[in-house]
Image 1 (cartoon, helix red, strand yellow):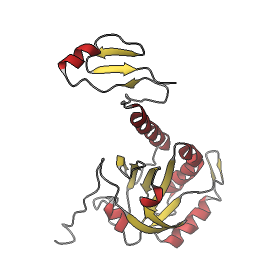
Image 2 (tube, rainbow, N blue to C red; image 1 turned 90 degrees about the vertical axis):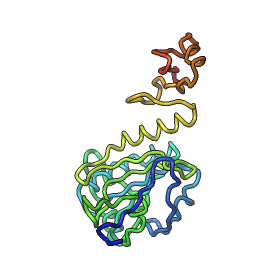
Image 3 (cartoon, helix red, strand yellow; image 1 turned 30 degrees about the vertical axis):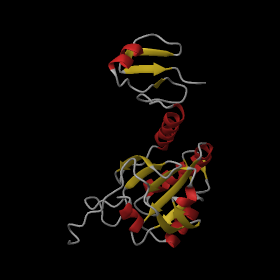
Length: 225
Protein backbone atom coordinates (compact mmCIF):
# COMPACT_ATOMS: atom_id res chain seq x y z
CA UNK A 1 0.00 0.00 0.00
CA UNK A 2 1.47 3.36 -1.00
CA UNK A 3 1.72 6.36 1.33
CA UNK A 4 -1.00 8.09 -0.71
CA UNK A 5 -3.48 5.25 -0.14
CA UNK A 6 -2.61 4.46 3.49
CA UNK A 7 -5.74 4.67 5.66
CA UNK A 8 -5.85 4.86 9.46
CA UNK A 9 -9.02 3.56 11.10
CA UNK A 10 -10.11 5.95 13.81
CA UNK A 11 -11.86 4.51 16.88
CA UNK A 12 -15.63 4.86 17.11
CA UNK A 13 -18.11 5.59 19.87
CA UNK A 14 -18.44 2.45 21.99
CA UNK A 15 -14.91 1.24 21.21
CA UNK A 16 -12.23 0.71 23.81
CA UNK A 17 -9.93 3.72 23.82
CA UNK A 18 -6.69 2.71 22.04
CA UNK A 19 -3.92 2.17 24.57
CA UNK A 20 -0.56 3.92 24.39
CA UNK A 21 2.45 5.01 26.40
CA UNK A 22 3.81 8.51 25.88
CA UNK A 23 5.87 11.31 27.37
CA UNK A 24 4.00 14.37 28.61
CA UNK A 25 4.70 17.67 30.32
CA UNK A 26 3.93 15.91 33.62
CA UNK A 27 5.96 12.76 32.97
CA UNK A 28 5.24 9.40 31.37
CA UNK A 29 1.62 8.32 30.90
CA UNK A 30 0.14 4.87 30.33
CA UNK A 31 -3.27 5.40 28.79
CA UNK A 32 -5.97 4.58 29.67
CA UNK A 33 -4.57 2.59 32.62
CA UNK A 34 -3.43 5.69 34.54
CA UNK A 35 -6.94 7.17 34.29
CA UNK A 36 -8.91 4.10 35.32
CA UNK A 37 -12.06 5.06 37.24
CA UNK A 38 -12.14 8.59 35.83
CA UNK A 39 -13.74 10.31 32.88
CA UNK A 40 -11.21 11.79 30.45
CA UNK A 41 -11.39 14.62 27.95
CA UNK A 42 -8.62 13.68 25.52
CA UNK A 43 -8.09 16.50 23.05
CA UNK A 44 -5.61 17.34 20.31
CA UNK A 45 -4.42 20.69 19.02
CA UNK A 46 -2.61 21.57 15.78
CA UNK A 47 0.57 23.14 17.10
CA UNK A 48 2.24 24.88 20.02
CA UNK A 49 2.43 28.68 20.11
CA UNK A 50 -0.68 29.07 17.95
CA UNK A 51 -3.26 31.69 18.96
CA UNK A 52 -6.47 29.64 18.97
CA UNK A 53 -4.82 26.81 20.94
CA UNK A 54 -3.45 29.30 23.45
CA UNK A 55 -6.94 30.63 24.23
CA UNK A 56 -8.25 27.06 24.55
CA UNK A 57 -5.56 26.13 27.04
CA UNK A 58 -6.31 29.21 29.11
CA UNK A 59 -10.02 28.38 29.23
CA UNK A 60 -9.37 24.73 30.07
CA UNK A 61 -6.96 25.71 32.84
CA UNK A 62 -9.58 28.06 34.30
CA UNK A 63 -12.16 25.21 34.24
CA UNK A 64 -9.87 22.43 35.51
CA UNK A 65 -11.38 22.41 39.01
CA UNK A 66 -14.91 22.27 37.55
CA UNK A 67 -13.98 19.16 35.59
CA UNK A 68 -12.28 17.59 38.62
CA UNK A 69 -15.56 17.94 40.52
CA UNK A 70 -17.09 15.79 37.78
CA UNK A 71 -14.38 13.11 38.23
CA UNK A 72 -12.99 14.22 34.86
CA UNK A 73 -9.34 14.61 33.87
CA UNK A 74 -7.92 16.60 30.96
CA UNK A 75 -5.27 15.25 28.59
CA UNK A 76 -3.88 17.18 25.63
CA UNK A 77 -1.78 16.25 22.61
CA UNK A 78 0.03 17.73 19.65
CA UNK A 79 2.77 16.50 17.34
CA UNK A 80 5.28 18.99 18.76
CA UNK A 81 8.21 18.05 20.99
CA UNK A 82 8.17 17.87 24.77
CA UNK A 83 10.52 20.87 25.01
CA UNK A 84 8.24 22.92 22.78
CA UNK A 85 5.27 21.97 24.99
CA UNK A 86 7.12 23.02 28.14
CA UNK A 87 8.14 26.36 26.66
CA UNK A 88 4.61 27.04 25.40
CA UNK A 89 2.93 26.11 28.69
CA UNK A 90 5.33 28.38 30.59
CA UNK A 91 4.51 31.25 28.24
CA UNK A 92 0.74 30.69 28.54
CA UNK A 93 1.04 30.94 32.31
CA UNK A 94 2.36 34.50 31.90
CA UNK A 95 -0.56 35.73 29.80
CA UNK A 96 -3.75 37.59 30.69
CA UNK A 97 -6.86 37.39 28.50
CA UNK A 98 -10.61 37.72 28.82
CA UNK A 99 -10.53 38.01 32.60
CA UNK A 100 -8.14 35.09 33.00
CA UNK A 101 -5.03 36.17 34.83
CA UNK A 102 -1.89 34.04 34.53
CA UNK A 103 -3.64 30.68 34.81
CA UNK A 104 -1.70 27.55 35.75
CA UNK A 105 -1.83 24.67 33.24
CA UNK A 106 -2.42 21.62 35.47
CA UNK A 107 -3.07 18.95 32.83
CA UNK A 108 -0.59 16.85 30.87
CA UNK A 109 0.24 17.53 27.22
CA UNK A 110 1.49 14.57 25.18
CA UNK A 111 4.49 14.95 22.89
CA UNK A 112 3.65 12.98 19.74
CA UNK A 113 6.49 13.73 17.33
CA UNK A 114 6.25 10.28 15.71
CA UNK A 115 2.46 10.77 15.32
CA UNK A 116 1.71 7.27 16.62
CA UNK A 117 -0.97 8.38 19.07
CA UNK A 118 -2.45 10.89 16.62
CA UNK A 119 -2.81 8.17 14.00
CA UNK A 120 -4.37 5.73 16.48
CA UNK A 121 -7.10 8.27 17.22
CA UNK A 122 -7.61 9.63 13.70
CA UNK A 123 -6.38 13.06 14.75
CA UNK A 124 -4.37 13.54 11.54
CA UNK A 125 -6.56 14.20 8.53
CA UNK A 126 -4.53 14.55 5.30
CA UNK A 127 -7.02 16.76 3.44
CA UNK A 128 -6.45 19.39 6.13
CA UNK A 129 -2.82 18.79 7.08
CA UNK A 130 -0.51 15.79 7.19
CA UNK A 131 1.67 17.35 9.89
CA UNK A 132 -0.84 18.88 12.31
CA UNK A 133 -3.54 17.26 14.40
CA UNK A 134 -7.04 18.67 13.97
CA UNK A 135 -9.01 19.83 17.02
CA UNK A 136 -10.36 16.44 18.09
CA UNK A 137 -12.12 15.73 21.39
CA UNK A 138 -12.65 12.22 22.75
CA UNK A 139 -14.81 11.73 25.84
CA UNK A 140 -13.71 8.49 27.53
CA UNK A 141 -15.56 6.96 30.47
CA UNK A 142 -14.15 5.36 33.66
CA UNK A 143 -14.09 1.94 31.97
CA UNK A 144 -11.96 3.24 29.11
CA UNK A 145 -14.81 3.29 26.57
CA UNK A 146 -15.14 6.13 24.05
CA UNK A 147 -18.51 7.77 24.65
CA UNK A 148 -18.38 10.84 22.39
CA UNK A 149 -16.20 12.25 19.61
CA UNK A 150 -16.16 15.86 18.39
CA UNK A 151 -14.03 17.32 15.59
CA UNK A 152 -13.39 21.01 15.00
CA UNK A 153 -11.55 22.64 12.09
CA UNK A 154 -8.14 24.22 12.64
CA UNK A 155 -9.59 27.73 12.61
CA UNK A 156 -12.30 27.29 15.26
CA UNK A 157 -11.80 27.27 19.01
CA UNK A 158 -13.77 24.74 21.03
CA UNK A 159 -16.66 25.53 23.37
CA UNK A 160 -15.65 23.89 26.63
CA UNK A 161 -18.89 24.83 28.36
CA UNK A 162 -20.63 22.59 25.82
CA UNK A 163 -18.09 19.83 26.41
CA UNK A 164 -18.75 20.10 30.15
CA UNK A 165 -22.50 19.88 29.44
CA UNK A 166 -21.85 16.73 27.42
CA UNK A 167 -19.98 15.15 30.35
CA UNK A 168 -22.87 16.02 32.66
CA UNK A 169 -25.41 14.55 30.22
CA UNK A 170 -23.46 11.31 29.83
CA UNK A 171 -23.10 10.94 33.58
CA UNK A 172 -26.81 11.65 34.02
CA UNK A 173 -27.74 9.01 31.46
CA UNK A 174 -25.51 6.42 33.15
CA UNK A 175 -26.66 7.18 36.68
CA UNK A 176 -30.41 7.48 36.01
CA UNK A 177 -30.85 5.18 32.98
CA UNK A 178 -32.35 7.93 30.86
CA UNK A 179 -31.67 10.14 27.84
CA UNK A 180 -31.41 13.92 27.75
CA UNK A 181 -33.38 16.14 25.34
CA UNK A 182 -32.00 18.90 23.13
CA UNK A 183 -30.13 21.56 25.06
CA UNK A 184 -30.53 19.71 28.39
CA UNK A 185 -28.83 21.15 31.45
CA UNK A 186 -28.83 19.76 35.03
CA UNK A 187 -32.19 20.10 36.76
CA UNK A 188 -34.25 19.87 33.57
CA UNK A 189 -36.55 16.97 32.73
CA UNK A 190 -35.08 13.84 31.17
CA UNK A 191 -36.44 11.27 28.69
CA UNK A 192 -37.17 7.74 29.87
CA UNK A 193 -36.36 4.77 27.59
CA UNK A 194 -38.69 4.32 24.62
CA UNK A 195 -41.34 1.61 24.73
CA UNK A 196 -40.38 -1.53 22.81
CA UNK A 197 -43.71 -3.38 22.77
CA UNK A 198 -47.31 -2.41 21.96
CA UNK A 199 -48.36 -3.22 25.53
CA UNK A 200 -45.67 -1.01 26.98
CA UNK A 201 -46.55 1.78 24.53
CA UNK A 202 -50.16 1.67 25.72
CA UNK A 203 -49.09 1.87 29.36
CA UNK A 204 -46.89 4.86 28.56
CA UNK A 205 -50.00 6.87 27.73
CA UNK A 206 -51.25 6.62 31.33
CA UNK A 207 -50.32 9.47 33.66
CA UNK A 208 -47.81 8.71 36.41
CA UNK A 209 -46.43 10.78 39.28
CA UNK A 210 -43.32 12.63 38.21
CA UNK A 211 -43.72 11.63 34.55
CA UNK A 212 -45.64 12.94 31.56
CA UNK A 213 -46.14 11.75 27.99
CA UNK A 214 -46.26 13.70 24.73
CA UNK A 215 -46.84 10.49 22.82
CA UNK A 216 -46.11 6.80 23.35
CA UNK A 217 -42.51 7.18 22.13
CA UNK A 218 -41.74 10.40 24.04
CA UNK A 219 -42.16 10.29 27.79
CA UNK A 220 -40.43 12.62 30.23
CA UNK A 221 -39.51 12.31 33.88
CA UNK A 222 -39.03 15.20 36.26
CA UNK A 223 -35.39 15.40 37.18
CA UNK A 224 -34.37 14.11 40.58
CA UNK A 225 -33.35 16.93 42.89
